[in-house]
Length: 211
Image (cartoon, rainbow, N blue to C red; front, side, top):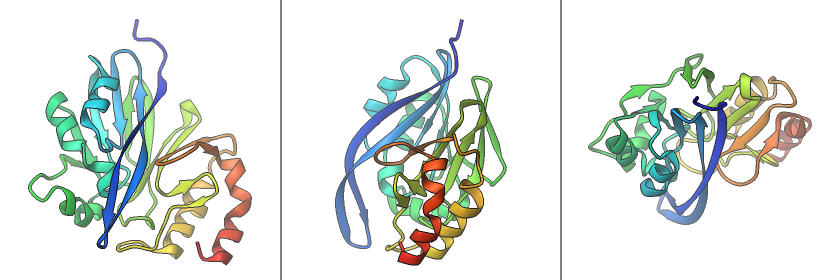
C-alpha cells in the first residue's frame, strides 16, 4: 500500500542573490505525494537534504514556483540524481539563466496545467509579480495552496528588485489566490503557513501601503 497522499515539509538554508546584494535565507521545500511517488516544490539550496527527504520514492517532477536562485539552485542536481524533470514557467527563463546558464529546465509550466502525483491534482496558477514567471500550485483535494513567494503570512512577496512589480503581484493575489476557498492552507516559500481566510481581508490595506 502506498499510504495516503500527504504534504511533507523541509527547511533548507543558504543565500539569495540579486541586483548585487546577497542575503541569508531559510527556504521551505514542499514534498507532495505518498509512499511511492512524490513531487518536490522548490528544490532550495541543498540537494542532499532534498534527496534524503525523497528517499527511495519515485520523484516525478521538480516544480519551480519561480527562478530566484534560492529556489532553484539545487534543482538540476536533484533532477540528475533521480531522473525527474525540472518544470518552470517560461517567463522566468531570464532569472533561471542567471543561476544555471548551461542547463535549461526540462519542461514548461502554464496557467491551468494540472500535475498529478499519487492521484492528487496540482493546478498551476500563473501569479506574476514577485517574478514574471511565478506560479502557485493549488491542490483542492488536500485543501492546500503552495504559494512560493507570491503570498506570505502577513502580506505579498517582495517586489523591490529586478523583474518584479507591485501592482502585478497585488492583482495576482486578488484575482487568482484570494478567490480560493477560505479554509485553504497556504504553504509559503519562506516562513509560516497561513490560510486564504486569514489573508483575504488585508488586500486593500497592502495595496494602499504599496507593499
